[in-house]
Amino acid sequence: MSPSCSSSIDRLKLEALKILRGTYRALAFFLGGGWMMLRIAFMTMLKGPDLQRSLRYRLHFLRWLIPTLGVRIEYYGEFPREAGLLMCNHRSYFDPIPVLRHVWAVPVGKASISKWPIIGVGAKMSGVVYVDRSTQEGRKAAREEINDLLTKGFSILIYPEGTIYPGPELGELKMGMFRDAAKNGYAIHPVALEYKHALDAWRGGISFVKHFYTRFGKKSVYIKVAFGEPLRSEDPEELASRFLHFNEAAIKEMREGWYIPYPKEEIT
Image 1 (cartoon, helix red, strand yellow):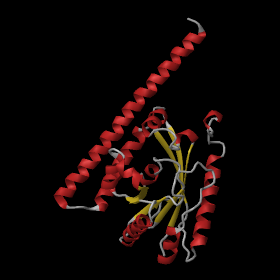
Image 2 (cartoon, one colour; image 1 turned 120 degrees about the horizontal axis):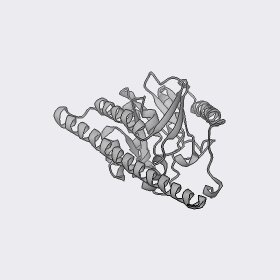
Image 3 (cartoon, helix red, strand yellow; image 1 turned 90 degrees about the horizontal axis):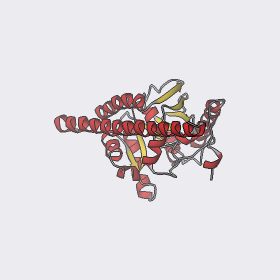
Image 4 (tube, helix red, strand yellow; image 1 turned 60 degrees about the vertical axis):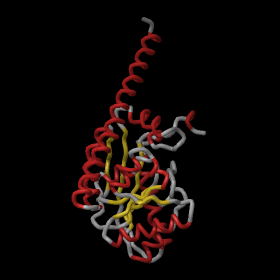
C-alpha cells in the first residue's frame, strides 16, 4: 500500500471517529438536558416553581455534561461569593456553561434562543432572562426582570457586548446594566473567557449542528475562565472602564503561548 493511500485511510478513520464521537456527545447533550427538564417539570408540579431548585438541577447537569463533551477548563481567581452581575466577554453559544458550572446565576440571552429545539425550553425551565433587543420595550422588560432577580438575591450572568465578538479586544459595551449597577449598588463580578482554538468559539457562520459535530467531535475542547475582584462605583463609566481593563488584560495573559488563531483560509 502506498504512503498516500495509507494516509487517506487514516484520515477517513479519524473523520469517522469524529462523527461517532460527535453523535454520542450530541445524544448525551440532548438526553441529559431532557432528563434535567423532566426533573424540573416533575418537582414544579409536585411542589410549585422554585428558581433556586431549578438552578441546582442545572448545576448537576452541567457538572456531568462538561466532561462528557470532552471540555477541559482552567479556572483563575476566586468564584463570586455574593450575588451580583457577572459580566463576561462573549465568544460562543457555549460561553455560559463553563461559568455556570461553578456559579449559581441566571444567564441573559437573546430572545431568538428561546426557539432553539430543547435548548431554548431547557434554558427557560432552568432559569434565563430572554431579551428582545430589537425593541425598546423588549430591552426595558429584560432590565426590569434582571433588577427584580437581583433584589431577590440571585446573580445574573450577562454579556455587555450584546453579541458574539472574536476578540482579543471587546466589542462596544452596552451601558444599561453598568448604569443600573452604579445606581443600585450592585456588585459587578468581571469574568474573562477564552477558547484555546479560535474555531471552537462559534461565530454563527455555520449551523449550530455542524459546529457542534466539528468541534465536539474532537477529543477535547480547551477553555480558560478568569474571575476578577468585585467592582463597585457610583459612576457607570468607571465600572465599564474597570471591567474592560480586567477583561482585556486577562484575555491577553490567557492567550500568551496557548491560543491558536483562525487558519488563514477561515478568515474572510
